[in-house]
Amino acid sequence: MVSNLSIGIVGLPNAGKSTLFNALVGRQIANIANYPFCTIDPNVGVVEVPDEKLDKLAQMSESVQKINAIVEFVDIAGLIKGASKGEGLGNKFLDNIRKCDAICHVVRGFSDTNVIKTGSDPMSDFEVVCTELILKDLETIDKFIDNNKKNTDNKKEYEVALKLKTELDKGSLAINVKLDSEEEKICKQFFLLTAKPYFIVVNLDEETYKKFSISNLQFKNEMEVVPICAKIEQELAEFSNQEKIEFLKDLGIEEAGLERVIKRAYEVLGLQSFYTTGKKESRAWTIKVGAKAPQAAGVIHTDFERGFIMAEVISFEELLEIKDWKKAKEMGKIRHEGRDYLMRPDDVVEFRFNV
Image (cartoon, rainbow, N blue to C red):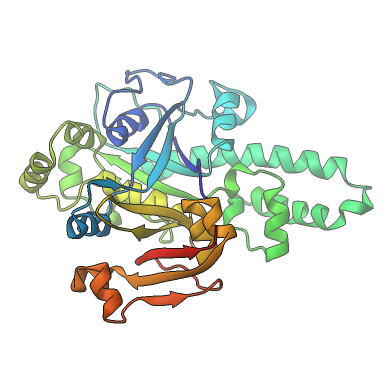
């Protein structure tokens, strides 16, 4: 079952983290001010995952209610160089990150002389944060190594710790260290900050955002960057859907940056959706990628997993073409899948189970 998975929004002070957070939750929650450590205690917001498939299913079924999948975002205090040694709000900041399941790195790509700048350029700012996370992880690993040099019972764990230390010393993030399945399980026991999945959001000013090119940012090729203008996104949060469409059209932008951020967060957490639909409601249910049918049934209700018989499944595209579940069943288009069925991200399902 999937629950309480959260993304920590991190970065240097005045990168636009709280502005992004407020835009995500669609209302003013986080304090926005032009000075470091404006956010001390983390703000938490639950955000719906935009889903065109769900929208179409709800329309097709004329559902009374539509329930999107959700992601939790946590707005964390700005970090400064030396955080790993307790500088600024370092210890509190790092502890808050440790509680999150993934990290959204917000880096500043806008110019505004009215907002104090604590970094230099997006790549360097990202590396400052990563360095502090690496230093804190090295502290954790070094402590384990010192305490287990003569402990023969922890030989494998000790070897993995040495391997991680070697790579962390080189400046590598733990998530990028090549580990086999056994080593990955051991790595999780260390609760390393750099072992968390992450993505990068570059916060741009309006003019730069409209003509943004990823080639203008000197990030490594393997890093996928999500461009946004947090200021625009916060304005959009106050508009109706039609007003948003017209506003973005006027700016020459096809998709709101927040939609990309939320979808990317969902992907980074290793999540996918499956759907149920009917007159009462259409709903996107959240499961881990690789989940099997009984696990998916258990997300709806634990009794469904315990008494699982089978899953009746049809793809979103096929159901939308036929436009009716009952008709699809009469046409023999509904598949009957058993316990070993791997759920797909476009599955529309009804589960059969014994009480």
